[in-house]
Amino acid sequence: MKHELDYFCIEGRTGGRQAWFWDPIMRLAGCAAIAASDSCISLARGFGLSRLCPCDAWDLTRRDYMTFAQRMKKGYLSPGWKGISRLELYINGLARYLADVGEARVSMTPLSGNAPVSRAARAIRAQLDRDILVPCLTLRHKDKKLDDYIWHWFLITGYEDRPDGLWVRATTYGGCEWISLERLWDTGYEERGGLILYDLPALEPPACARMGCVG
Image (cartoon, one colour):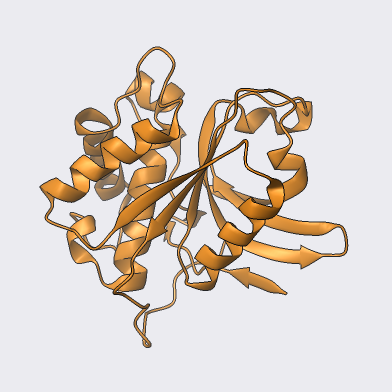
């Protein structure tokens, strides 16, 4: 079984890119603000939550996107010297944004990276089956091939059941990559990140939602 979210594109790239920003903090440590901004855009498109995105979520320009993400970083998810390194920091920051824009229909629950991978797999399937993306934080990792994900927030926007287990589509840096969830989850370190689970109990995706960019 395979499920992928239709995802937004800007100038032919999937989602946004840290490399676009002139702000050195955004370029180096703005991944949480970008994950939150991308989440808001995706939920605005998929569930009609227009308050979440201050611009047209269906016709994004690079300037629109950068202005929004910069606002998210400055007002709600400004990284300290360790960045947004805990799930609770992300939840608290984005919750303040939700309150400020008057959107009470979205809540968040953390799922620690210390939870069993089977629990993470169930949560990811449940979210994506409702067309809700999943922010993921990876701190350190023993697999050097995953260095791009160290101390990094990114988004899970798809899953596929394969003979060797569940694979997830990681969306970040303006592109997508398929990764074994078991490989991603087993960091080899005690200090771990985890997942953010969005809850929209009263909402379902509009039946006639416009198609986006799968990536």
